[in-house]
Image 1 (tube, rainbow, N blue to C red):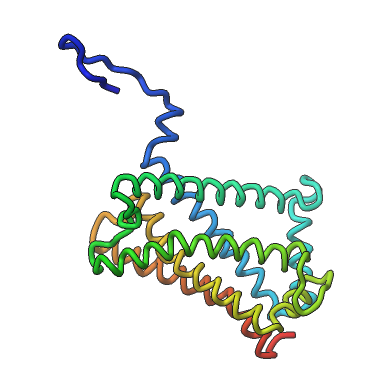
Image 2 (image 1 turned 180 degrees about the vertical axis):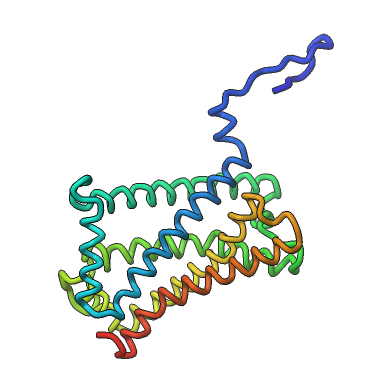
Length: 247
């Protein structure tokens, strides 16, 4: 890296690769993009598992047991599931860490208006700021809080509105049979959908998928489709349970 000239001579100081990686905006954005896509893939698989509720208790509980026996005997009981959890947790931490660094950097650069970096050139600036700020910052906070509640309720069986049960199927039916649980779940999923829509677009844009008008339109359509499908897929089971179609 060049320094101030001294006696007409410019001194170049080498920057370590590790320091460059940690400070590079391009690397941080790429890390956010890749980890975001890992989480999208996980959501698709998780959505598929949730939809098993329409096949009945035996199918749903059988799928839950299968998740803990995947890879055996090569892996210990629940070994594959723990690998998935570690990869997902690492992706979440990297995603949040990179987002925090980029947001703070953009805020310093714009005098406190960090959300401007998410703005689209085609929308009014006030709308851009509001949309980007909610979906990528506060939407992320809502999603994080929802994930903690979701784990406590349906994974760890720590809290159990509607009644406790050792059966994953019964925990889901009992929980979503309570109206406020379903409503709070729906609100959180709308935040997930908005976050997904903009996050999916940003991820592929970072990876170079919006290099032309045609590709940009295709990417817009894909982002909306992914957000709608995942949001609707996760909303179907609780709505069906609350309505009495399942249970």
